[in-house]
Image (cartoon, rainbow, N blue to C red; front, side, top):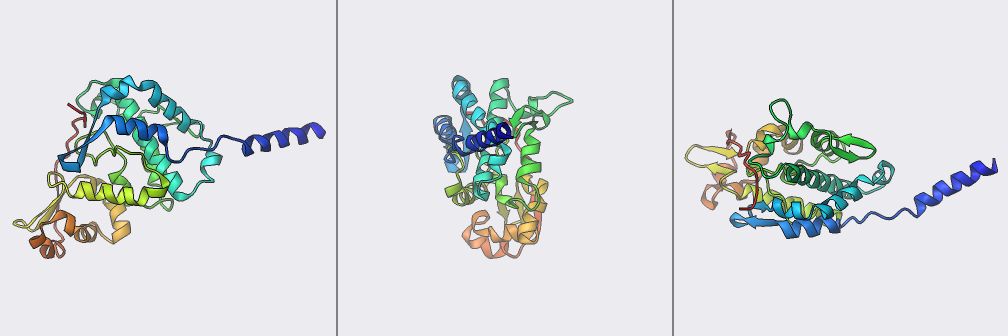
Amino acid sequence: MRALLLLVMLGLSGLSFAKPFEHNHPQWTALLARHVTWVKPGYASQVDYQGFQQDQAELDSYLAVLSNVPRQQYDTWSRDQRLAFLINAYNAFTVKLVTEHYPLDSIKDIGGVFGSPWTQAFIPLFGQTLTLNQIEHSMIREPGVFDEPRIHFAVNCASIGCPALRPDAFVASTIDAQLQDSQRRFLSDRSRNRFDAAGGHFRVSKIFDWYADDFTKQSGSLQTYLQKQATLLAAAEEQAQAQSTSKVKFLDYNWSLNQAH
C-alpha cells in the first residue's frame, strides 16, 4: 500500500513539475521570420524551402516539442492556445513534408498516383501517428470545438492558390487579430478573390467552394459572408452592388509550390 502511494505521489509530482509549454512558439517564430517573405504586396508569401532544409535540425527540434505534448496537457489549455497549437502544427509539419521531397513543383507531387500528401500518416502527435487531414478536419474543424472559418486563411497547403503562410507563429494572445489579418490579406488579392461588377457576381477561390459549409455556419450562407466582405472584394464604387449580389463563381486553384525564387 505504501509503495502504491509513493508511485501515485511521484506521478503527481511529475505532472506538477513538467516543463511548461511555450505558447509563443519561439522556435517556429524564428524559422518563419528567417524563411518566409511577404510578396504582392503583402497578399501572399513565398517560402524558402531550401533555407528550411538547411535549418532542418531546428525545425525537427520544434516538431519534437509539439510531439512531446501529452493530450492531457493540451486539454487543460485555453481555446486559443489549443487552436494556435494545431494551426502551427499543421503548417510546420507541412513544411517538413515539403522539405523532405524538395525540390518539387507542387505538394501534390508527393504521394504519387495512388497517394496524397494529406493522407500520409507521418505526424507523431498525442501518442498517435496522424495525417494532415486528421489535424485539419478531425481536430481543427471538428464541429462544436472551434467553429472558426477563418482557419482556412491560416492553415497553409504550400501552394500559390492557398492563403499565405505567415512569417510569424500563431499565438493565443494575438490569434484573433492574426486570423483577421490573414483573412484581409487573402480577400484583398484580386488575382484570387474579387467582385466582378460587369458580370454581377463574386469570383473567389475554390476554398469557398470546398468549405462553404464552414462559412455558412457562421454567416447563414456563403453569399452573406461574401457580401459582408464587400469592402475587401470590391472597389469603393462597386461595394453597394456587391452587398446585394448573390451570384458566386469559383476560380481555378493554383497548386504550384509557394516557393521563393
